[in-house]
Each structure stands twice: as structure tokens, then as C-alpha cells.
Amino acid sequence: MRFEIVAKDAMGRIGRLQTPHGTVETPALLPVINPNIDFIPAHELRKYGAEMMITNSYIIYRSRNLRERALKKGLHGLLGVDMPVMTDSGSFQLMVYGDVEVTNEEIVRFQNEIGSDIVTPLDIPTPPDAEHETARKDLEETIRREREAEEIHESYGHENLLSIPIQGSTHLDLRKRSAEAANSINGDVFAVGAVVPLLDTYRFSDVAKIVLTAKSVLTPARPVHLFGAGHPMIFALYAAMGVDLFDSAAYALFAKDDRYLTPRGTLKLEELQYFPCSCPVCLSHTPEELRRMEKGERARLIAEHNLYVSFEEIRRVKQAIKSNELFELVENRIRAHPYLVQAWREIRNFIDVMERHDPSMKRVFFYLGRESLYRPAIRRHHERVLNVKVDKDEIVISSDPGVKADFYLRPAFGVVPAELMESYPAGHAEMYDDVEDEAYEVAAEGLRRFMEKHRDKRIRLVLDDRWRRFVNVQD
Ligand SMILES: [Zn+2]
Image 1: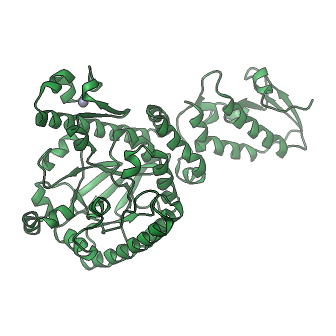
Image 2 (image 1 turned 180 degrees about the vertical axis):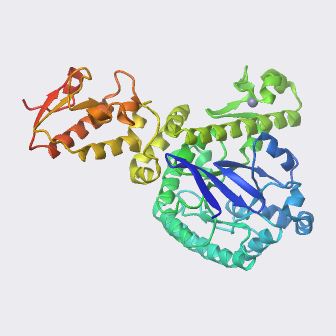
Image 3 (image 1 turned 120 degrees about the vertical axis):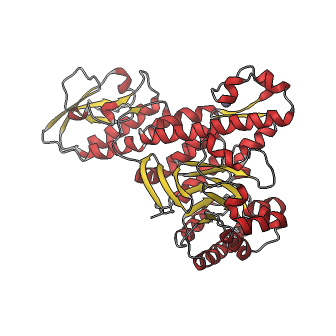
């Protein structure tokens, strides 16, 4: 097994991915290194927290000088690193320029010959909102190339890993078809592609639908890479939807434009009076000092900050998975932008998928707003309580914990057996007073189903005024 899952929360996981150049812990961020531009050198990336990087094999292939050096010294020798390096194939150039001067076979062979740790076929990145027929034809060609890549890769012994892109534009039926095909190909990493135009325009919901659709089909045994996603504001959100690998040139591209990354969004250097960060760059400079610097020096420092803050967020996500608080972190992070809230709400349509992955036992349940209602723990509780055996002929259900009863009512959870009032999740849930109506509606629906199930019994309800508004009682 090349990918071992060691911890899970929501649909996120901490995993260990084995490559020829060592094991990488996921979720991981792969900074993009452009072999033509010496901005932040590849060998320095470990300092910021990188365990793997990604570079473009097509850029190397196209330049005679780089190509010859890579074939002679290997990819790692060319970049001067010993950590795992993934390579992209030129698909991005295909999307931007509409054409590339290499075939799938040539670029897959080339990546194998220079010793890439993760090889990527030359897939067709269909842009968002393409005509269905165009996207379908592109996808069929992508699948053909993936099968061809599989065969070539096997001929090299399959010691390094093979990435299988998931395409289909914004058509979810095609993304599903792509994921089904990917399961049947002997690859090691699934790569959800062509989402950069969506991320650039904050269409986080569309990306969420694509990721969740793919995840509902893909085998959980292999890691999922979200190609071109590298802003720290989206790591928690998409990690919770099951993304294991992120990559991006954002740290460098944004820096060259005086844009400063934070987990709550992008800030412009010109608008900053203070740095809300304690990385070495921010501790030793003020925004004003940076503004007065020469452009190249300033871009380099902002890029360093961007890397520090991105890896800090990756570690925060990992810790949240480890302590089963990823829902809490996501519900916190999405407050940074309305479209992030909207994106997270997509999980309502994928509750079954979420439920398959999310662990059922945790320590805490912090109710942080109506998005907390989508957590599988609530639906699981509702199902479980319907199966609780009740021997008595009369059941007392009370909304007041001070009254002696067989069952108690809690917003969101609904009916809670008295003996579970100290157990996870209902008994451990911390909620604020005056929680929103939706939490009562969800609870009232649970109560209705419970009463329906036990309609042969006498049920006595002790309800306060707030509960009375949501529960239909016939005296
Ligand atoms: Zn900083």
C-alpha cells in the first residue's frame, strides 16, 4: 500500500503517501517551482514546511538546456533537492494556449526518465461551463490518454507514482464518469483538474460540487489532489471534503503583485498598517518598511510570508483532523467569505458520502451556527434513537432537564434518552442559548418520527414555550 490513512475527521484524513524520495504526510501543500525562474529556490522549501513540491515537466521538456540537464542529472539533480517532486504534464499550457508541442506518450516517458515521483498524463483540461458535448469528447480523450499512460508507466516498472486526472468541466455527470474510469486505472493519486478558473472567480460552490461528486465515486484508498488550489483560506474547507493534496504557485504570483495571503483571505500590502502574523518576515518588518523596499526584495519577503502562513494552515487542518475538530475549524473558516459559506452548504446534498467517512465517536461537539446541523453526528443520533428499545407503556419526554423523564429534548438532536444525557454527541454538545429556529425544527422532526414509531404507547410531553412553537401537540 502506497497510501496509508492514519486519522480521519469529516471526510478529511491524515495519510502517509510513499514515494521513491520518501514518505509525505497528507494533507500536504506542494509549492509550484518554475524551473526557469529562480525566485524561492527549491532547496529552501523545506524550511517553510514543504515535504513535496511540484514542477512542470513540459517547461523542462521544451527547453533544450533544461531537458538535457534533467535527462543527465535527473529531475532532483536539476532542482537540487532530495524531497519528492511531482510533475505536471503541460495540461495547464494546453488550457491557456490551446496547444502544446508534445504528445501524451512523449511527456509520460519523459517524466519517467527524469525520475519524477508522481507522473501526470497529458489530460485535456476542459474549462468550466463548456458545452456538454465538448466536455464529453475531451473527457473520452483524457481517459484514453490515462489508459495509455498506465501502460507506459507499467513498462517502466511503476516504481514512481501515477496521477490520474479527473475532468469533465462543470458537468457533474461527466466528473462522475471520469471518477469511475479513474478507479479502474492502476494509478496512485487522483487529481481533480481544471478548477483554477473557478477558484480565481470565487466559485467555491462549483468546486465543492465537483470534489464531492468525485469523492462519492472514488475509492477512498488513494489520495485526492485538487490541482492548482493553494490559497490557505480554502484548505480547511476542501480538506474536510476529502482533498489530500494541494498545490499552488499562489505564494509567488500573489507576492509579485504585493498581495499578502492569510487564512481569512488576501490582503493588499498598500492597505496594511500591521501584519496579523508572527512569521519571521512579519516579526522583523512593518508593512511600511516593505512598501519602501525595492520590488524584487519585497516580493521575495511577501512570498516567504505566504509560504509560512500556508503551511501553518495545513498544520492547523491536520491538528483539527487529529483532535476531531475539523467541522469546528471549517465552520469558523467559512465566515471569511459568503461564497465559502455557500460552498460548505453543498454538503447537505452529499450527507451520505460524508456519513460514510466521518468517525462516529468524538470528544466534543461545538454547535457554531446552522451549518453545524449538517454534521453526520446529528443525523446518526436521530437514526439511533429510533432504534432505542422502550419497554414502558408510558413515556415522558421533557424539554426541561430538571424534570424527571425517560427522554429529554435538545435542539438539533431532538429526543435524547436520559441515560445518554452525558454521552457524545447529544450530551456533549455545547450550544448557545436561543439557538436558531432551524435547530428546533430539525429536533421537532426527530420527535415526530419518534412519536410515530411509538404510537402504541402513551407519550407525555413536558414542553416549554419555545418548544411548543415547533411541536404540534394534540392534548
Ligand atoms: Zn507573516
